[in-house]
Image (cartoon, rainbow, N blue to C red; front, side, top):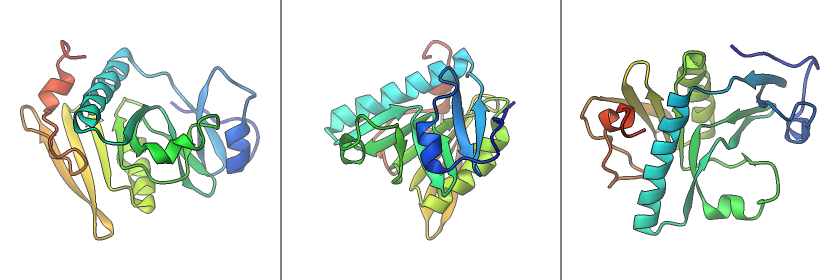
Length: 190
């Protein structure tokens, strides 16, 4: 369930400065602030597991990248989404450390974990908004269906590959990463 605020429309700049309700998180969708429900513990722990795996791979390969939880991405003129995880170069954030955590450039990789209230948002709306930005790689981790969909930007469209069970994920951004949906969804790992 998402709720919107009373004001009719917000600009992107107004969204970045919005402080009337500091206890809640909002995405900006067509100028409207949409309240984001708190995630489940499963969602939180899956995000932590994935981010830890990505950070370990970034450190192992000594890449100048960061894996960031719950950062924003400007996806349009009056749109901004909060991604569960994204990977960016250090250069993309180092010059704006004390500013709102919303990227105005495309991340290298975006990951969303599906919740019951985010199915359409993650599979449809964010997919089309991330495609419009030309984000090279987008993962949809779906604990409800026990699958991981990896979308790779090729020739102006996303090519989709679905992984389940013990199939090893194939990621162009992290080509040496050894990870399966089974590992992601196993309670002991999260």
